[in-house]
Length: 116
Image 1 (cartoon, rainbow, N blue to C red):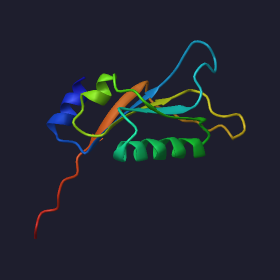
Image 2 (image 1 turned 180 degrees about the vertical axis):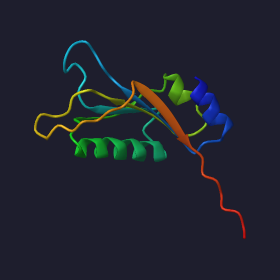
Image 3 (image 1 turned 90 degrees about the vertical axis):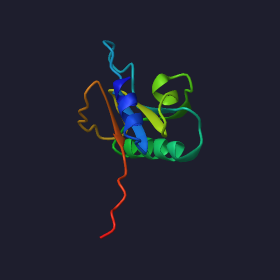
Image 4 (image 1 turned 180 degrees about the horizontal axis):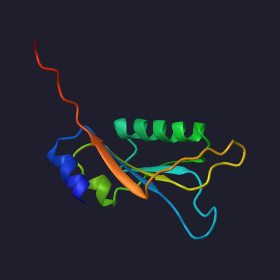
């Protein structure tokens, strides 16, 4: 919740939270899916681009899904995405080592250039 409040206070342009799914059961979570409030606007384009880029390095693309009930998606004042990346990658591609913490969030605020 702190990251949401900070992003809102800083008037971020967008908010992306990335979670790594894990389980004691091997290969329970495979691939990447991105959750958004609704399938519209820049957040949909960003979600599709993220999933596509991760698919290119071997993750199975599980698609973009609407989840309007998630706090991280409904309490932000900017387009928000929740990326759920599983441990495993598709078997038909070479496995790459991808190291992420269990979860992290980042946001970006564009600062306008000042006149010289």
